[in-house]
Length: 524
Image 1 (cartoon, one colour):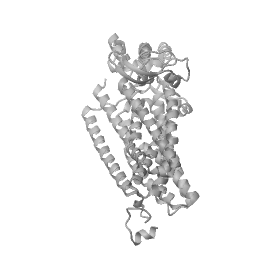
Image 2: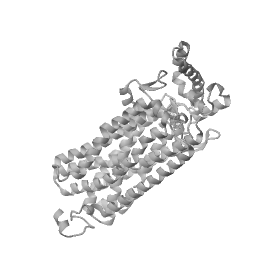
Image 3: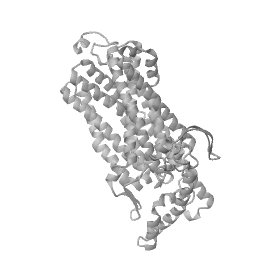
Image 4: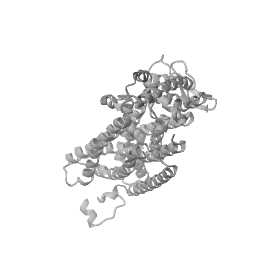
């Protein structure tokens, strides 16, 4: 058996690299469609300020894109280096959307981004706008295929285990593609990216307005960000509700942990706003609840119950006991694939094979599992409730705060003079980190809430890792964190530098903080 330390360090390493990477992804997803909007206005009106907006915000987009690509490449290699058995066990399914992402989306996105930056003087207005649109499509296609892969990890449809190959195999590609979890996760995640891009533009534009610099440029950028952000924030909330429903259908354990729902409540269940969680006693010492709301979100009905953690554990205990039969039958088939009794037994219990594997964290032979070991395996099937409960609520709270900000910002654009309200501009500036915090918390809820599984209900995390030494994991973890921190510092330095320079960095001679002279006059 692989030690718990190797498993924990492997998880920590992947979590660290993924969370670093996801600092860059939402801004890339969000800003690219704002560039499309800005350039579309330029093509329709011929007003040069809209071209300048596209070029300036595109410069910040490009810096972020480069760092996102750099931090993302290592993630795919980790599936082979740190998660070798996972790659072997589900590679036929998981590898397909990742390969399509590289061939269909990443190459398109990378090609178009080159034409975006170097094609201004070589393409017509309409041609360049088409490049920007294709760049946006490529960015979102990239997110789509990655989230299809991740959605399958959350809800492994369209596949089944083969005792002939001893691994999972895809049986229906389109079921994997149209997986409700994947589709809900995609629209929710890209909408969160749109909010991030809108907040970025809104905050920096507010800073220009507070400084009374490049006011007409900043007003236009503020208006675009406010309108785009309001629509995106509403989408995040609506689509987040749909995502909650799919979680309630496919991952009842995650739903119960998010709600700190220890007991099954009468339908429709209420939504717990805040609570004092006592994980040792498996209860909430006190809680404030809104009646009916959770039942409507999680079940779309007023009669269907949402199971509590105790009921879920009782069901999981039965599945673990059935899983012992599945593991034993699989061992028999490994030695004799023509064993008809083992085949019948395996077909009867194969749905619970993954639950039988949970025991292998504690014993090599599942038949040696004592009642105490089975109890530990049952407890493992539920992630820690406290971090899930509060991470979700902070994320939702930030979402509604951003919706309020975008709503007021959009309303202010209807009365131009109100754009000068210092309190609104300062609020927008201070809210700049909010979408990144919300996005990181969202990924934490999605991924930590799936534990103890890499493939929900199919493959436990402790079975997925590679056979690595603790020292090599410490060394690579330190190297990744050090390298990624340097990249983050570089990103912050460049972003702050060019944001402070503003549109004057374009050298057109039309904005503040520009040197004057013949070279600048030639661009005007």
